Image (cartoon, rainbow, N blue to C red; front, side, top):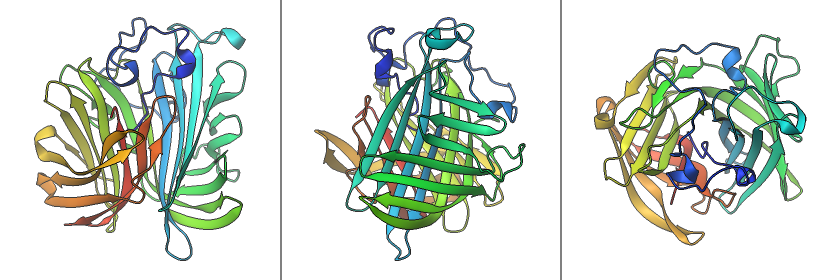
Length: 354
């Protein structure tokens, strides 16, 4: 789920003070369309943008290894935020602002980049068929040889920043996954929600250029796709989100929305190796911080115990690099993790609002 719901700094001149929740995402959003249960996801349309909603993102994380077995992580994200509801305006009158985040993580360093674009002028955007999401020269799009109706099954991914650039090919070997109740994902007890689906079954391979050195990498990637209008309750100040790839082929998504009342909202999805899903409710999930790390002047829980009672899961996570901090316009921690216990594997952790 991730730092997905960010109020862009570029919108500060059009937005009120960010008073509620992480990055103001508890603020009222009158005039935008609301997320409601029972509305089916439709493809390929839902690969594209949803301008009637206030915010959305296209989000990829990847756990990778080089030819020596050393581990790396890669992140690619495109966010859209609307400053006002209504039909999309043309040119510089367009009310959408786009933001991109890219990051590369190794055991010894974490590099990231951030870029902004205004909607309506071709600098950033998303098309559903053939699929393409871009900002400047960063791209997440259908592979050149992919059939026009292949959607997100064969895609390429590229981005660059200071001292890094990467280009990867991704091929799905499993189905899309609808999170929550058939794509309706609750985030609070009072009904805040998003539409949310994932592609957690990507195989990924390509080249990372890190400080001038080319490194061939391969591994597993996870794509999240989410959109909403009012995402947080006013008392929710941030979240902790996990995506896990098990060595046996299963997947797991878990999140905790931290609430100042002390009653955190927890949810998740168990994904079998064949793509079958089980929705996980609050009482089935335990997320326990084990170790705090001082990062960027704050204390962040970088080691966790994760439990899913219905599946007999009990694992402990460890970060590849505890300093995987995104010092972007609205800062957050995000990086690759490994886990061991009743099962083992790799994944990603994102934490906001600390």
